Length: 89
Image (cartoon, rainbow, N blue to C red):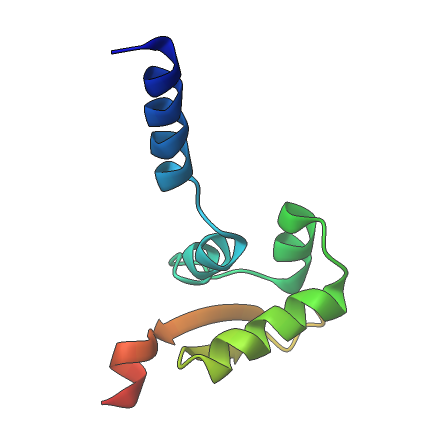
C-alpha cells in the first residue's frame, strides 16, 4: 500500500469512530443518573436555551425524554426513557 492510501484508511477509521453531538447527547441522556441542562451545556459549549432546543429536536425525532425535578430548588434531571423505535410501539 502507498502512504496516501494508508492515510485515507486511517482518516476513514477516525471518522467512523467520531460521535456526533446528537449521539453524545443521547449517551448523556441514557446514563442511569441522566443529565442536567447545565451538564450538557458545559460539555458542548452551548447556551442553555440551545441545549433545551436540542432536547426538543430529539423529542421530535421520536425519543421519549422525561424531566425529574427534586423540588428542593436544584436543577431537574433529564433522562431518555425510549429511543425512536421504542417510542413508536
